[in-house]
Amino acid sequence: MCTRHLTLLTDLYELTMMQGYFHSETQKSKTVVFDLFYRKNPSGNGFAICCGLEQAIDYIKNLRFTKEDIEYLKSLNIFADDFLSYLESFKFTGEIYAIPEGSIVFPMEPLLRLKANIMEAQLVETALLNIINHQSLIATKASRVVWAAQGDPVMEFGLRRAQGPDAGTWGARAAVIAGCVGTSNVLTGQTFNVPVKGTHAHSWVMSFPTELDAFRAYAKEFPNMCILLVDTYNTLEQGVPDAITVFKEMQAKGPMPKGYGIRLDSGDLAYLSKKARKMLDDAGFKDAIISASSDLDEYLITSLKSQGAKITLWGVGTKLITSDDSPAFGGVYKLCAETDETGKFIPKIKLSNNPEKVTLPGIKKVVRIYDNATNKIKADLITLDHEVIDENKDLTLFDHVATWKRMTLKAGTYYTKEMLVPIFKDGNLVYSSPSTEEIKEYASKEINTLWDEHRRLTNPQVVPVDLSEELYLLREKMIRKMK
Image 1 (tube, rainbow, N blue to C red):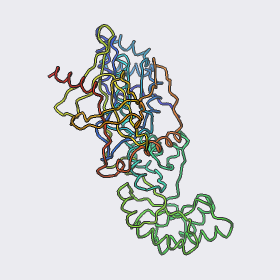
Image 2: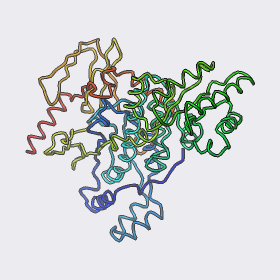
Image 3: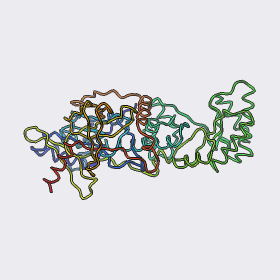
């Protein structure tokens, strides 16, 4: 993976707050805890897929101010010399727990929990949100597209429409983690060792005297990955017949490769794919791939499938890599605890006129509860970090808004898993990131812990995310005290 220096990838106010803390004797020695979480699932989904931890780790590992950084900050004429001297030897010395990439996650639960000196904790806010928000957004969108394809392979190829090189490269990785079989982005393939796939453009066909000449040349050059784009001139009267001609010529030379077929990029994809399927089958090419592109998303794929489209490979670009219908993930980073003058952690809470913006106080963890019989998720429980769930006892869960809604799980019918795992301790990395393909396999298993009702594209069933009684009472007590 290519390491980049991202220390100044931050909002100015993170640095101005740092200087304010640095010059305050009571503040500069504080240790604080921040939660990174989100409030609402994107695209109306029933869940999100957590992504971005690998880049976040790389960012934290390489967090230091270079000579050039210091000189630039000095040129702004707003920072004191003693603060800039402090930055020269700055490094992260804190602790991070996070939910592993590829995990199913839900609103309000910490995806990342950071404990550090207040200046360290403040600096990293913007970059961590930038990284995790974007990649979790694209992974979640990709999971919807993959779900709509109902087992058909989906390829990501949105690089040219992504909001910049990083969005295209890390976004493609997130899409692969969420289930795409590959990407057109060669840099993503090289960096993360994931499959790269592609065909050719209309310009290839247009650059030859005839479409048939173009197809023959492509088949000669790439006989083992011969997907021919058939809609440059006339799909059914010329493109598909020309492709069949080339396939017959290939067949005469030996067995057909596994990866051959046609691509449709315009027109009525349902009608064209059904007609093309019959033409290919009648010619003896029943195993030929029919791939399709053209501004696809989960809704159009669902519609095409309902119309009986014969598409077997879906190429999804713009609307996936930009998360077209939901352009932001909405993650936030909020203070939940800090040390007092004795070093004891004191819970902190933020109030708001918007109830959904009231934060959860204290140092917390996320416990996932599974049904023993099905291995499906029953609920998530946000607890204070010291709390322990005894699986040998009945467990009562309650809705922290409508508290009369309760569910009791009998001992022996459920099991639990703590979702947050240690990443950094005392500034040292203690976590080994799996490969992208390993994370993809893990994500697939994670998605299978949901019922189909939770995966519906519209109006999905909500997985309960409840608070432990101790956390609920702490929050209520702090709200009453502050009011």
